Amino acid sequence: MKRLVIKDIEKCVGCSLCMYACARKNAHKPEIGISSSGILAISLSGFERGATIIFCRACREPPCSEVCPTGAMSARKEGGVTFHEDLCIACGNCMKACTIEAIFMREDEKPAVCIHCGYCVEFCPHGVLGFEEVKA
Image (cartoon, rainbow, N blue to C red; front, top):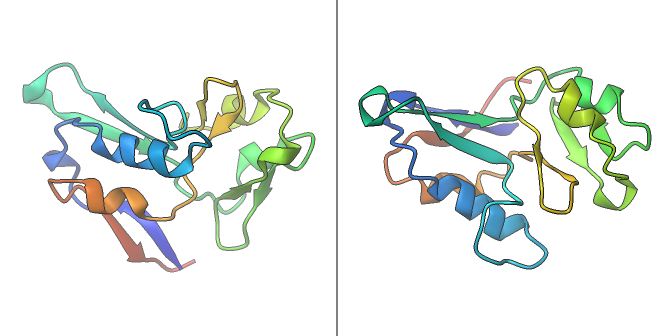
């Protein structure tokens, strides 16, 4: 199975192009902004310290799916989750349960989570991200 991976975090400058690409692909109304992004690039306190990227790491037994009362976050057999927005009641349990805080709140208070589609990779100008085959 292919997954989003970090190839070289040292190259990340926090440009946020991955976030904008994700948000534009996944938003119902592709307005400018990052509310629908399932990936977050954040500065580590200045250009000299670089940036880091946070996204779902595709847990084998995702805690977010275990606490979802409606099944909106369902575990995939190869790791990670599938998000069923129509079942989501915006309770926030999944965001609280994620051990790496990789589920983000959209403007409508529903979650945004990486689905490992790889779309953001082509927008990363520094080769930080990759979409590669990984052993499940």
